[in-house]
Length: 429
Ligand code: HSE
Image 1 (cartoon, helix red, strand yellow):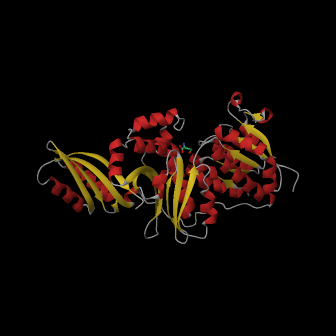
Image 2: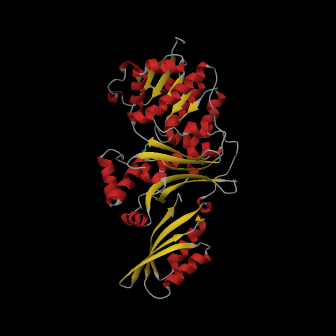
Image 3: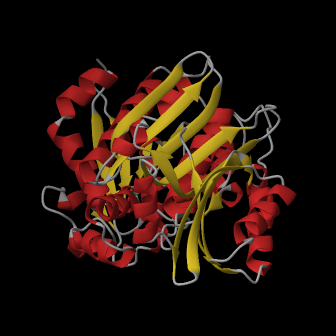
């Protein structure tokens, strides 16, 4: 084993960074044996040195992250700051100064992954980011390496623990969205500002990363159709339960049937209770992958938190250190298919639509005609009437999202349709 250590700079020492530092110290001998050389924490860049956690060596702490990555003797930079800047500038500087990078930064990779990969390649360095998607769950490496000989057609996942916790509470207790969010906040699952989670930005970044790797093309967060879960009501959940379904916030990446394009989207959807993703409870994540030869695979586990995310970071650290020692690099960006990303309108799926209508002769026929005129075939209709008004629940066969949108637009124009109470896609059948 080489005795000269590989030097590691850690950018960020919050919940994840402090766990990375702790495990690097407590598991130093095992890490050295697995890598073939010791790894030494050479510096830890933080914004607020007074907040550095117990067990983190104080003498390594600096507030000058730029100087740390430009030192010239750093072999690997671990970036767990998050956000676009200064993370992007620091990672770029790290590559230019000969370091490989391990990052947990989904927002940055989803926004600018191609440029980062190009910078890594130009400098003969590695860029690894297993921790950016679903915490401890191995997904990036299985898609990049284990399934590199297969053809992935679909990735369907629960990649945000906060929203899964909220929907699970709504499903199991009948609570409304606000009540379930309050509980998630009280238990520390939801942040004080939960926007990134509940509006689907976090899941959309992960969907972009998964789609790009799965389909060997470039997908950025701007290509991902995004709807959060703030509009999901207790009535939607009850309606799903009546259909033998539950509601999940899903990230769905698909290859089109003709193979000429892909789509990536995040939105709440009903899935049958028989689908493996329906049993993913609380704040757990799970991703279902469908590939030509492998068939259906499911990856399940904790998608957030200090230790689980640190596990993924350290796995990457071992890999890039091994690459450094053998003078090589791991797989870089694979975007050779150049498949375009189609808009949401091209997505084909089923829909569950709740309408409030007048309860009088001919209304059902009028509604059915609108569906027929837009080429959307109805599978089931359920009606419940009371005092001259009725609630109609329609489930369609598979149709293009654009056709469903025009159908709903036309339904809203009917005098007899008092309102469109909810529209939810039905997936996983
Ligand atoms: N906030 C995310 C979640 C974890 O709730 O799953 C980090 O991506």
